[in-house]
Image (cartoon, rainbow, N blue to C red; front, side, top):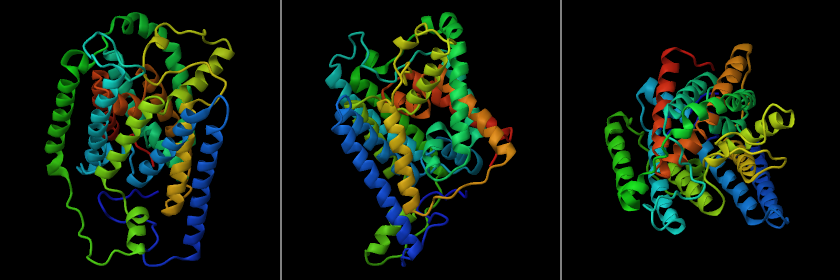
Amino acid sequence: MVEATTGGGTLSGAAPASSLTTTALARYLFAALALIAIALAAYTLHTTPGRGARASFALLSGAALGIAFQRGRFCFYCILRDFIQRRDSGPIYAILTALAVGGVGYAIVFGQFLPNATAGRLPPDAHIGPVSWVVAAGGLTFGLGMVLSGACISGHLYRLGEGYARAPIALFGSLIGFGLGFFTWRELYISTLVRAPVAWLPGTFGYAGALAIHLTILGAIALLLLRFVPELPARPAGRITLARIRDSILGQRWNPLLTGAIVGLIGVFLYFRVEPLGVTSQIGSLTRTFMTDNGWLTDRLNGLDTFSGCATAVVNTITENGLLIGGLVAGSLAAALASNRFKLSRLTVRNSLTALIGGALMGWGAMVSLGCTVGTLLSGISAFAISGWIFGAAVFAGVWIGLKLRLESS
């Protein structure tokens, strides 16, 4: 699949804005049916005893996230790859914007949950993890896995809705990686994590101070990257028509600032209503349940169930996180159909093997780091966790090393 260019350029394969062919109408119809199915499923969940508003909100939030990811090409690997290989920093502003919006929103929500940030307590369930070499090793491994598999875990989920054939293989590999992580967890916890500090900026500087530091760092990064932002193509002047609106929404890649703002807002509202944004809790729980049921793990792993983040558990049902993931894939599918981006990609022995290995590396990295680029990085940094910055820097290093070693496979 050919990747979109940065900025406002038209995505390859997009239908001309000036005409609506029979094929385009069919695509819009199937996209509409997908959205209707999501809405009906959300309504059913809302009225189902034992599920209710939380489950419905998780599904709808996932759908909104899938649409934003697909239309904005919000894949951490693709974004970092474009900067490292092409010196194109434009897409990075989607991440920076999401973190800025998320930080402001989290500060407001935290103030409601925990008015006194310096009292020695942490806000409930937020992605605030231990600071140690383990999270750095997890991020580095995760970054290498991104290069090998062709996307991060969230990227594979939304590209699954685009027909990316490597995605299911990489996601299966992540299940294997989580299993390896569970096997290595006890030793890592006893040797390091049990004594590792959990650093949270508001605990030292208060909410105002933490938010000021957060926005200053993001602003400094944004200023440093301005020199690498390519010149955006000029758009012809003209009247606002339905065709031009359709082309802006479905034909062109969404502006990184808009995409990042949407992602950041979804993360804030999701934390307020359900749980912190993350995409690996259900995936890890599937592996943990399978291993526990077969006697490979005990019901409780030392320290794991006391940390916040993308928590795993022995479950025999679809959790809110699973509904979020399902909504993400379904939302991406609807957006891909409407924008003519759905296309089954070609599998080879090599790219299947690298997807599997890369997925396993990401699974291990996400397990020991208590989350992936969406959980530990995006939600963690938004929650003012030092562990999020360490994981993010390590992921960048892993992607850089992987690309320099030419590990990528299309």
